[in-house]
Length: 187
Image: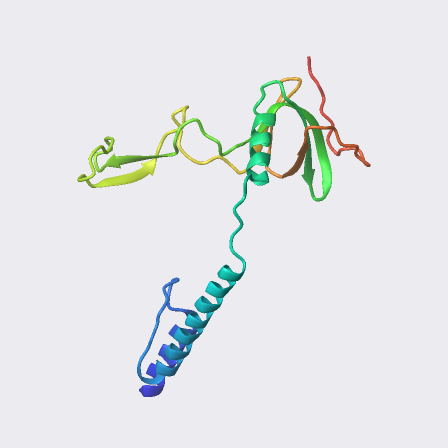
C-alpha cells in the first residue's frame, strides 16, 4: 500500500498535478527538497538585487519604439494612402495589389464583442447584481467570430480578403518572379 501511495505522490510531483494545478508537498520525505528550493529562490532573488544595483534601469529621454508606432499610425491612417501588398502562400507570391487606405484585421470590430448582462439578459448596471459576460451581436446583428486574416480595398475599389502570410510596403518592391494569381479588372 505504501508503494502505491508513494508512486501516486511521485506522479503528481513530476507532472505538476492534474489539469495545470501545482502540488507542493513539504514535510516528511520532501523536507530537504523544500529547503533546497527555498534556498535557491532566495539565492536567485539576492543575485537579481545585486544585478539591478550594478546595472540600473536607464532613464530614457525618448522612446524610438513609441515614435515608430506613432509614425506608423500616422502614415497608414490616411484614407488616400497608397501601399503595396504581396500575398504569400507556400513561399510564393500569389498576388500583388496596390492598396488604398490601410490593411485591416478581419477581427477588428466597430463595437465590443462581449457584453455584461443579468441572468434575464438585461444590461447589468449594479455591482451587487449577479452578472454574466456573453457574446454581443455585431453591427449586422449576427454573432460569431471572423476567420483570422486581413482585408483591404485596392486602388481600383476591389475588396480583398486574405488569410495567409503577406508583406506590405509603402513603396513598390521589385519581384524576381511573377505572382501566381493575376487580377482581372472587370469594367
